[in-house]
Image 1 (tube, helix red, strand yellow):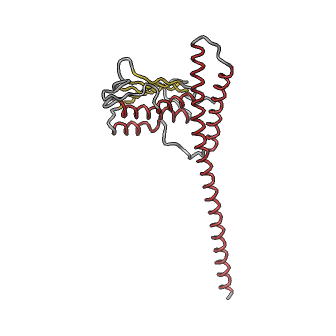
Image 2 (cartoon, helix red, strand yellow):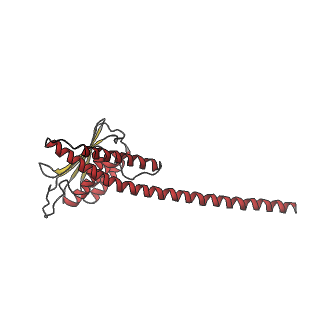
Image 3 (tube, helix red, strand yellow):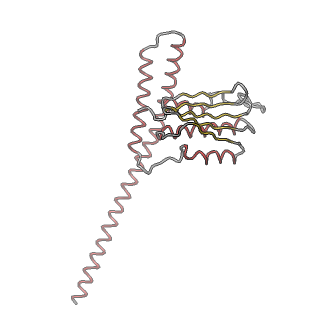
Length: 240
């Protein structure tokens, strides 16, 4: 009888333990799902706001450049808009970096360049890659931006340049990463009558916004000897 009672007590404790474990598991799953949803919302807000703010920064920067080129005084309000936009972009990047978990990576970055090139080649675009200078660690934002620039440039080659060949050149210095993608296609206009975006396509606008948000420079347009070039200069470390 005593043995049966002890077995019953052990069984009861085991049932209670399983119930407690199940409750903790439910709470853990609920917390994890809540965190994932908050992170998803944060990303969507970040992407939407960064796009809008980057457009403001680019437009303000162009207006400042044109005013100075004409020898005119730049209105203080315009300079304030430009600086406020850059500051807002920095704050958004900082906020999202806090919200991300260490394992919340992005499948883009120059570490994935070989796969990107392989996909372009499989799509019929011959690509060569050259890396010069001493490679150095890049901030995550710059690493991703460099990858996206190459990705968009190779996409445009396949879309607009027919059977062109492309070359990707990465050049590292202590402070700047240069990303250049050239092709030997028809340049600003294709033989089939379609027009290549001379620096103003939606993808290229996205490149400009991304580069401007990092404090870099980008040029995209036909080459003098034929073909098309995308050239970006990015700071090795994003502006903080």
